[in-house]
Image (cartoon, rainbow, N blue to C red; front, top):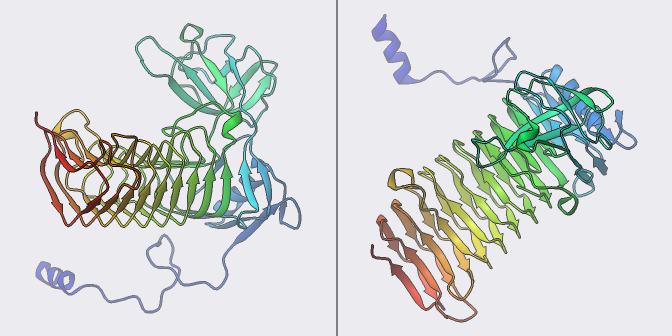
Length: 425
């Protein structure tokens, strides 16, 4: 019997020729002619409204019935909290006339301490805060060099005293200069799968909002998700990141325009496996594409990175990625940067940089491709590096003293003072 099972596995299973919807089976599904769609908008929609409550009502309804599409009609939607996606839900706009944005942020100190087990806070000045708002609590515990960040929603109030949707699980004390701010992503999701965000504009109102970095927020912020598609989205002007996903797998970002952010245009975050980043425009951000920690088996192809400080940054255990056929122009710092990290075991090994065009990188001593730290086994093949200003002391490719097995092949380099510089330790 065991031998028969092995033989069956070796031959492969029969193909599914007549799919049926079967209880608790999501591997195969018939191609239904119609699926559930709920429209939301200022008029002529099933749910009338332009607040996060209207969009969230549609998301929750569609999710309860097993999935489908929330179709946002043309209009400007001002959000006091993030739209929280659910599994099997597609958030679809109507093109550039569908704009999700947020009002100016406000910040106030806490008037009383709250301990880690509390589910409430008391604000010094509660004007401008409302029930249903998403908030960000920041504090500086003695043992932490960077601020502690807690994201919650206000669900009840008595004067300046607010109940939260969940317990704090961290101490929030006045001695740590604790504050409450109306900071949040525009669209978010956590522990969900099979979602899509398509064909809309996300505007972070950067000029009127405080910073909340891409480990917590962005125009889109996803945490612990899988099978995600973000297509034809314009993400602009967030005081932080444009599109950020942390520990999210099989994320596709395609034909998006992410620009004007103080942080990162695209942030494939820590531990994310197999991202596909294709055909996007990433302009005037701090970094265009930032491979965070442990991003593996990803593809970045045919993207246009223009006017960022760094075009593409790759580092901490980001291995086995392919960066191909991108155009990286007018970076104020470096075109492509391999970060030095904490030592060779932390670096970005076994990546391939292929057929990219890198134009006018940095200042008078700018570098097109800078491979730092103990980076190993990287192939830099068939790239075109151009400098159209003046050679000055500019460098095409620089290899750090600790780098090993960096293969340079068929790269065309023009207009720089030195094509390749190999540092010596």
